[in-house]
Image (cartoon, rainbow, N blue to C red; front, side, top):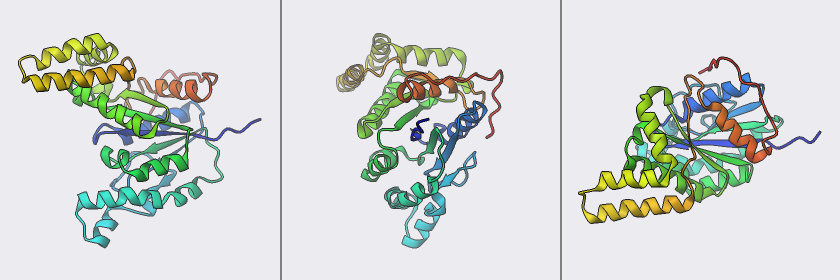
Amino acid sequence: MILREPVYLYFLGTAGCGKSTLTGAFSSWLDQMDVSNQVVNLDPGADSVPYEPDVDIREWVTLQEVMKEYGLGPNGAQIVTADMLALQLPHVKKALEGSRPSVVLVDTPGQLELFTFRESTRHIIENLSGRRSLLVYIVDPFNARTATGLTSQMVLASLCHFRFSVPFTMVLSKADLVERRELDRILHISSSPEVLYEALLSEVRGSPSMEKEYALDLYRTLEDLGLFGTLKPLSAQTGEGLEMIYKVYTDIFLGGEEEVELPDEFNPVI
């Protein structure tokens, strides 16, 4: 029997999109499916997380300690800790030694820009998981209610994909908190370039020409990147759609070979 190296799923998105909640819920879902997994918390500024991490970066660095040691405020300390994460990578790797899970779930820091656009993060992903990495970009539906809001989220997602050049998927969180009509509209305009184009035109109509041209330029970029039709609705509370993350993982890394029997009811341990 050939033992595969684990695949690392990095959950990322804007602050408040539900990264930690989804990480914990998906770990519980995998447990119920008998899929071995471990959870890594990479957020040194988290006061608490809704799961029991197997590896916790806060054992070696915390936002509060950096603020105290260097006399920094929260914003400055977040920048410092973003780079310090790479220095703690040997501790993280050592803590993961000896275990052979199928999947490692990585809960990333709350500030998307500090995790995504610091060069230290590229070092972390390249040395921790390399090509056996999957980015799960989480779109908050409350930031995607309009065509311009959705376009902005899709642009951020595409930048994350561009930065790391590893397999990538987009999900829409908190599906249980959004009215069905609103949820359907978000999914509808994200699935079709033509529909998003018309929705953008409607929103920017009457706006200054520069704003209109800028919105349409962003649309054309997204169309070229092929991001349409990839948004998957899910809920960490009800378990709706969690199997789609698993399907993306198996399709990319296992050729779609591995299957699990879905439970009648999901009981998240979060």
